Structure formats: C-alpha cells, structure tokens
Amino acid sequence: MKLIRLALPIIVFLAAWEMISRSSLVNAALFPPPSKVMSALIEMIKSGEMFRDMRASYLRLIVGLTGGVSVGMLLGLLTGRMKLAADLLTPLIQILRPLPPVAIIPLVIVWFGIGEPAKVFSIGFAVFFPVWINSHLGAQQVPQRLLWSAATLTKSKWRTFSQVIFPAALPFIVAGLRVGIALSFVMVFVAELTGASEGIGYQISTAHLAYRIDKMMAALAVLGASGALADYLFAVGIVKVYPWLKFAQTK
Amino acid sequence: MVEVRSDKMNDAQISVKNLSVAYRDAVVLKQISLDVRRGEFVSLVGPSGSGKTTLLNALAGFIPASGELHVPGKVGVVFQDYSVFPWMTVAQNIAFGLENGKRKDQDEIVRHHLKLIQLEDKGDRYPAQLSGGQVQRVGIARALAPEPEVIFMDEPYGALDRHTREKMQQWLLNVWSAEHKTIIFVTHDIDEAIYLSDRVLVLNSGKVAAEHHIPFDRPRDEEIKFSSEFIRLKKEIYDRMN
Image (cartoon, rainbow over all chains, first blue to last red; front, side, top):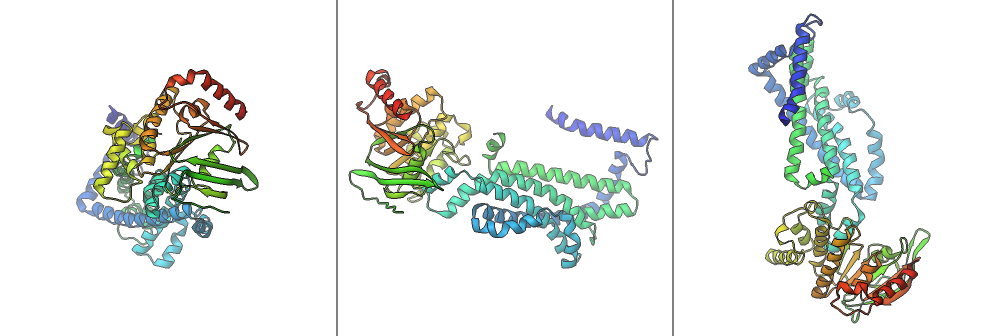
C-alpha cells in the first residue's frame, strides 16, 4: 500500500508527460516523451558513456563532500564549544557564508585551473557552510546539566567530547549533512559545466550543444535520482549506525 | 574566593561557612553556613527563586561560589531533565562513570545496579523506550555506580505523576539505607521533603530561613503522612516558605 502511495505520483506524472508530448500541443523535439528519454538513457548506458559520467561525477562528489564535511564538522564543533575558536573563526566564516557558492567558481578556476582540484574544491566549499553552522549550533546547545553530569562521572576531556558533546550535537549535524549532500549535487553539476571532459554535468551541457533534449533529460533524471537515493541511503544508514537517533527524530 | 575540597572529613562530610553566590551584581545566596553528617538525608525546600537549586549547584562545584566549602571530591548528581544520556543504553549509562577497573568488574557493577533499579532485563534499551520513573531510576543508578560519597538530587521526581512519585520515594529510601550515601535533595514538594529527610532546610531569598529536624523513626511508612505530627511540620514549613 505504502509503495503504491509513493510510486503513484511519479507514474501519474510520467503518464501525463507522455500524453502531452505525444499530443500536438507541444513541440515534441523540445519536449520529448519519457519513452524517448528512456531509450536515450538505454543508449547512453549501452555505449558506456553513462557509467563513465556517473563514475566521474560521483568521485568528485565523494571527495568534495568528504572534505567539506570533515572540515565543517571539525570547525563547527570547535567554534561551538571554544570561545577562542569562535571569536577567531566565526566572523570570517560568517562573511563568506552568504556568498552563493556558484559565485566562487570563476575565482577557483583562476586558482586551481580547470582540472579536478577546482571541481572538488568548489563542492567542498559549498558543503562546508551548512555543515559548519549546524555543527556549531549543535555543539552550542548541549544542555549544561548534561555537561555537569558528565563532569561528575569522568575527568577525561576526550570521553566528554566523544561520548557527550558529539552525540548531543549529532541531530543538528545530521541535518547539516543532509543539506550538504543536496548541495554537493548542485555543485557537481555547476562545476562540470566548465572544463570537464566527463561527468553528468558535462553530459548535460554537451547534449544541450548537440540539441539532444532526450539525452539532456536522461542525464537530468540520473542526477536527480542519484541525489534522492544518496539522501535516502544517508538517512537510513545513519540510524543503523546510531539507532537512538530514531527516538531523537520522533520527539 | 576560597574553595577547599577534601576527601578526609570526619563527622561532618559537607561543611560550608559563609557561602555566597552572585550572578553579575545580584547576590543569589547570602552567607550560608551548613554542616551535613555522613549518611544524612537533607532536603532543601523553598519557593521558586529562593536559591535552593543554586545552593545545590554551588555545593556540587558546578558554579563558582565564595566562602569556605568542604565537599568530598567524588560526588554524584541527578537532575529532573537530562538526567541520562539518550544516546546510551541503560547499561552504557550506568557504566559511563566506571573508568577504572577490569571490564569484568564493570559488568558486575552494572549488573548489580540494574538489579537495584529493577531493570535487569532492560540493560540494552534506550531511555526513550522506558517510562519516566524508569529513566529516573537509571539516572540514580548512574550516579550511584562510581560509589560517590554524596549524591545531589535536583527535583528528580518533579516530572513524575503522583503515584510513580510515591513509589520512587519509597524505593529511594530503601536504596539510601542500603548504600549509606549522603543525599542532598532539592524539591518544592513539602510532603516529599519531610517523608524522605532527616533534616529539611527552608530557603528564602538566598538565606536559610528555617531548619527542621524530622523526628520520625526509620524505616518510615506512608502512614506517617497522615499523622498530626507530620501535618504540624508541614504547616510550619509552609509558613516559612511564604
């Protein structure tokens, strides 16, 4: 039953799209039906270009995401808990934060050229901010009484950090990570528009130049589906690793 | 600021002279002096803002205070909220304060305390899967497990319904007499304070307004709550609070 509820809107959407583009209401060349997009996708899979592009994009995404998440989480926990770190870093981060991450790409290209480092850096840069702010707020809101309780039970700073502060901040961090994952999909596309020779974003822009709307849509569908799948896997996986999070979420 | 902490106390386990606490310019506690015997059960009652929680926090060393303060180095604490770590199972919560000693001994201590709180079969549950009374028992077990000399409790039963609360009071008295701990107990419930304590201190405007020794023999029975002596004490304390 639940599966039907989840799949029905997608089926209705695809069916409506198929009918509209087969009618003479719209120009089928600009608005190809899902069946044509599907055959373009199969063609791309058979030729091997789709896997090549997916591999390239996912690799950039994983490296950039890992970098942005690590630095964001580390600095967020630091600025959230340490007055000195907050005073030193927060003003700088807050000035950079309102910049649309896309706007730094021209500068990044000047710095890093058009190779992989530029793409990975752009993704990491974008991911950093939501992860940082959420980790920062999460670390800041740890109830004082939990810390007092912990202080009567352990003298170890490391245990207090890893077993009290970090898990207390985790629901916030998880929220930041989900925003970061979504942003990384935006950024991998944008970063591949310039100076890429493979990747899903590259595929979309070359299909555009070749006027292959069906291929464009196929690549877009893959990008969208991978983003949704990544978010789903993360949400499921994190609860597997930290089972108590499911109680934190329902509260 | 003078703050002296020592593990070597004789008859008075907690000894405080002229303890004052100030937040910015406001003085919250004014020159409080207090001695607590080893194994004594002392309750602090008072209206909101009287300073009872501040006194407990100062005694536990959580907030800075001026005056002379002798409190054992090893204390336990139980709060009304946030008394347990929601990300740890019941057994992990109890084991958190056990850093020294062999793994096997730790398991034994955890088992002992699970039995004490009547949750032997719930060691691998998370606090969110327990009732309010059970969670508070886990908090008390976690405070007891490292064997502190003094336990500070800040309205531990404030969020419980009346029936659970009364059962928990009886249970706490049993644990207290079995484990021989000194307990400092903050509550706004006068019945609870009288029923549990050897001594009740009434705080008002940051000062000890009155001190009542509770004469009832132990072990105590719920019936004493209906005695004229109990009601007389309750009235006296009530008058001092308002």
